[in-house]
Amino acid sequence: MNAVDESQAEATPVRPRHAAPAADSEQAPTDATAVPPIVVDGLTKDFGRVRAVDALSFTVAPGRVTGFLGPNGAGKSTTLRVLLGLAEPTSGRATFGGVGYRDLPMPQQRVGAVLEPAFHPGRTGRDHLAVQAATAGATPRRINELLALVGLADAADRRVGGYSLGMRQRLALATALLGEPDYLILDEPGNGLDPEGIHWLRGFLQSYAARGNVVLMSSHILNEVEATVDDVVVIGNGRLLRQSPMQDLAAERRSIRLRVQDQRTATAVLDRMRLSWQQVDDRQGGFLQVQTTDPGAVGAAIFEAGLPVLELAPQEVDLESEFFALLGGQP
Ligand SMILES: Nc1ncnc2c1ncn2[C@@H]1O[C@H](COP(=O)(O)OP(=O)(O)OP(=O)(O)O)[C@@H](O)[C@H]1O
Image 1 (cartoon, rainbow, N blue to C red):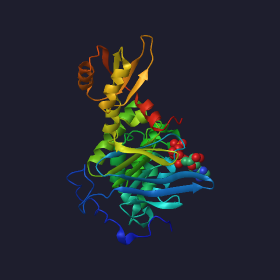
Image 2 (image 1 turned 120 degrees about the vertical axis):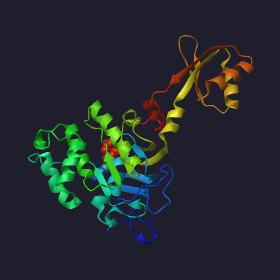
Image 3 (image 1 turned 90 degrees about the horizontal axis):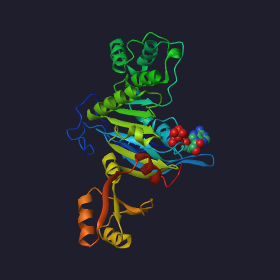
Image 4 (image 1 turned 180 degrees about the vertical axis):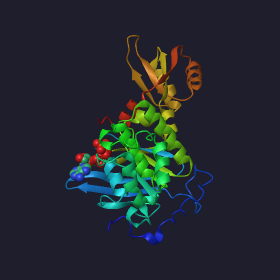
């Protein structure tokens, strides 16, 4: 048995299936009807001498879409595999409100997961779902609903061997949804989807989460998930680098280009305002890139210090650069 589940007695009670979601999905669930959060607590996973996950702790709240982000090899898949009972942790736990996957009653009906989609190429999409439906307790009607939901109704009776990567992703998602799970865990679900598919997935995940469910999706491309996720958990080298609402990350990206003649006095003003700044050289003698959501306040303070402002213009820091900075320059 895995080591993630030794104290069921302390576990948060799991929500009765199909109970109403929490009224206020912004808050951690406090009532018995809310889906308990995913809790990763001091998780470490070694493969021989490789430490894939290193004392990692974070929570994933219901009612929100959480992006699990990090570059290739950061430890995302390993964390998800431990959470899903597919790998043993070296130490620590990854649970659904305190209950390990293997100790959940009817886990296939509580947790839907899309890891690396693998299908029998000779089966049709409908057959694949029918085979899986038996374990997930789904009816033929549910299969039809799901095929329509993921946009595969017309391709349902074609062999999966002829499906595109995007169609396979859609079928994998339909499979994960068979048991009407409270938890949806997706490893790089955007892989192979065209822009229309990504747009559809975004809307689907947001409405799924809005019903009080827990949605955790991994990606190594921050730009890809920016418009989809409410919260981000960023890891690098198996360690937690950041957990915050996406909004906060987005706000930090707002900066201004401030051009003054006397940069030294200007930076003293910025330091007093406790703003982060960076000197950037260009052909016009350089400028200060200042992280702020209030350009007016910066302009006023610089003016009060008696400095003529040569330029003050809003600037968007590319999200991928922000991600890169967070990773401390890791590729
Ligand atoms: N079964 C395994 N045996 C040995 N090393 C492994 C195994 N699985 C993962 N690793 C190593 O653990 C580290 C984390 O890998 P993991 O696949 O979890 O990262 P990831 O963030 O999901 O990356 P990717 O997006 O490339 O899948 C990597 O160094 C990887 O080589």
